Amino acid sequence: MPNDRIAASVPQPADAIAEVQHISKSFTTDGHERVVLQDISLAINFGEVVAVLGPSGCGKSTLLRILTGLVSATSGAVLCHGQPLHGLHPGAAIVFQNFALYPWLTVHDNVRVGVHRKGLTPTDEAERIRHAIDLVGLEGFEEAYPKELSGGMKQRVGIARAFVGGPEILCMDEPFSALDVLTAESLRSEVYGLWSRGDLGLKSMLLITHLIDEAVFLADRIVILGANPGCIREVVMNPLPHPREYRDSAFVALVDEIHELVTQIHLPERPIAPPTAAPVPEPVPFVQVGEIIGLLAVVHDHGDHINIFELATRLRLELGHVLLAINAAELLDLVDTPKQEVLLTALGREFLAAGDANTRKRIFHRQLRKVPTFAFLVERLRAAPKLHLPAEIVQEELAMHLPNEPPQPLFDTVVTWGRYAELLGYDPATQTVYLDVESTAGPMDGLRA
Ligand code: ADP
Ligand code: MG
Image (cartoon, rainbow, N blue to C red):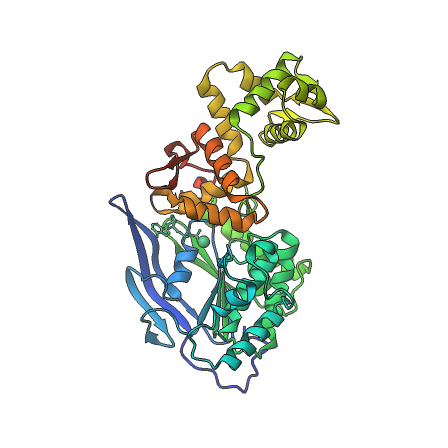
């Protein structure tokens, strides 16, 4: 549908702003070639918002990177205004899921990255930056550093940095999925607001998402990808007028219709699984695995339940530290804490009863995968080349999500718990974190098969 902000009388260029024709993309890891995208043709035209919808791992980010020139296609044509694209798309700006801010730069300087080297006069540059910061409501925070900002504010910086260069196409890769639901909803409306004002020079938007209602809220055209290899399975036009309202019956009906399509594509003849949000890291208590096990043993010796103060006395530990150990055990569902009591759960009893180290590790492993921080790392590592990531990257990504946690103890705790559970490994020689082979299978595998 033509966007309401583009007057019918404005002549529109015939060529697509960004386009791929019959592209395929393969990656080779450990000598194995894997086709990630196969025979994809897609054009983003003047005046439209296109959403690409698909489950995690189906190649959405790779498609965005190819359209913007960040990576090359293995075969097929990549075009910019009808001409072969060489290097980066000059009119594209990208908003990343993980914000991708420089931790050592202020808000102002992070936004400046988006206009740097555009050859503006210092006055013009300063004015553009001021305007972009103003648009996303960050005035007053110019001198703040990313670690001082909430997730929503960080993504505002990411959006300002994208807008500041005056892009003609704004490409967003799951831009709101690292945020809580309410923040995501309000930022989504704000981005639509910025687009519909029409005075920013923006001519189109590409949204990568795995959320159906996000696609229906923003996009005029919704492209549904199938997985393994990623290919276009359906294209759905969205005729709903703006402003769109999640609770409108027509909105709900379109979401349902797409839900059904996605289900048929990815889960043929299986029960519908609701789209799960990407896991977001949460703080973990800085305690040793041995302390958790010690705590369980003391509770057990005391008849499987004990008062917290009594527990501190028996463990000969300072109360604050005992509380951390209790938090850790509770996070793993090994104890419950009604009032000032600590009770072993059935799982906690099973853990203790298993005298052998392997059964304990298996229980720890299973529980750890449900802890958001570990679920997040498993997803990141599964998407990483050879399932390895430099420790530095892991630390930075954790710090981005958990700016108030001291990075070193956080990293050390995550690695020691992960190693004990044989979920993660750490290679000190190369300073890389890797996924233990046992951990490469996961809940999304059903979708990928
Ligand atoms: P999505 O964004 O849909 O989650 P991606 O485009 O990130 O998916 O990745 C699609 C597949 O391609 C994944 O299996 C991922 O592991 C793989 N992949 C992505 N980038 C690389 C790379 N640089 N090297 C090897 N494999 C990669
Ligand atoms: Mg992605």
